[in-house]
Image (cartoon, rainbow over the protein chains, first blue to last red):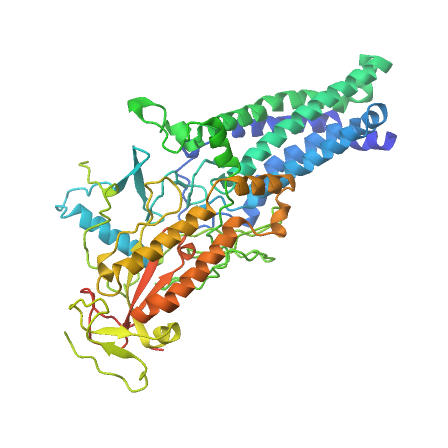
Length: 406
Length: 184
């Protein structure tokens, strides 16, 4: 036990350093949503969105906190609590810690629901439709904005055109400027996990914040119990002398609690209303002009069930695909969604992936070099096939390409 | 209405002067017996994209509106049947009910490691869909010179239908000109 104490009771200096780091992280936690991100940091060269090395460095922030601080303060008190109270206490803490790490890795390395960029034929098809809908635009006049109106649950929802991905974004999708991809059911880009949070990994993100809150509360509580029990035996001042790390870490946990529990509470609120952070920040369904959330079931339990217990959506990203610069034909892709995606070699940044598609990943902890859809450069290549003659655009009754005067 | 000359080694292709539904337009239609023949002796003329239908929310559903480019190629009912069946498959995959709750809870308890062993329901349905599309291509679409691409290969955004013309044919369909891609 002595060796553990000397090994793990950090000098005050190191703990203070970590506290500073922690405060730095806390300021980042509360900044969510694409508006908070510097949109102008678009690189002039195409970059792969989920590069293995960047992923690691961003995730390090979250990991350094969880791995370094939380267990340290607990490991000091473990033997004491195990002996005096129950061995189940550290065991449960370890289980919870493993769960937190698994959720963090799963959130960080899973595809959030990236929508691949449109292949040239599809992009051309959509362009033809838009041009047909817009009619003749006089020279010098700005063409109308590319918006489609769709009626969902008696609510008109606008689908915007993404100029980067060359698609009309599905409802609730948004383009993340950091990842440079459109993400389905875009929530926010989380710097802690170094990944976007979207349709596919929102529940892992929520479970991560929830379990982290529980872990922090648990450690906070039992650290206090530890200090209290020792104080009963040997007095408070002696306890601080014996285990200064524990006392300091109690303070750290106390400050951490507010941000992590706050974030969990915020997301619980969003889930109960079936909203995303992005929609909340933009005030899409804030009730002005009687605009209601068309996706909400108006029932908290149903909303929670849909978000947390919904089906596991497949990934449509081809992480290993190589984009042919001047090709207009679709690159061959393995469309089997059931096969496990295992990769051992991180692909270099010069390899850009093409639009679709790939095997769904199964394992949460397997490290995958994830190269998201890079920028397509083949839009200017000569058209091989004549695009379909401009007939009437998607004239399905509710979905009309609306021309709005600028 | 132009004549089509048969090229010797493609003796199995038949050219009919009338559609199966009796429409009198586009008298020249390449007919292929199977997928291999389609791929080997036809050239891609056109691609039609069936877009998503978002009127029911974010569930995966495709529009059943019959595109005009296919009017002379396939019967409306066959096309609508295919799209409706696909929509039903996707609805089954995305259904939120007892099984999805069970799967979700079980997966959560095992830290999602259970997906190493079992397949999710969505994946099972995707396999069914891919088998269905393969079957439809073989039985219905390839004989008409069409080919459906599985939506999963296009990011679940569109159903891409490739329209093939017989290589060397000077016929046209729906006003699109035949462009021959590089020969094999």
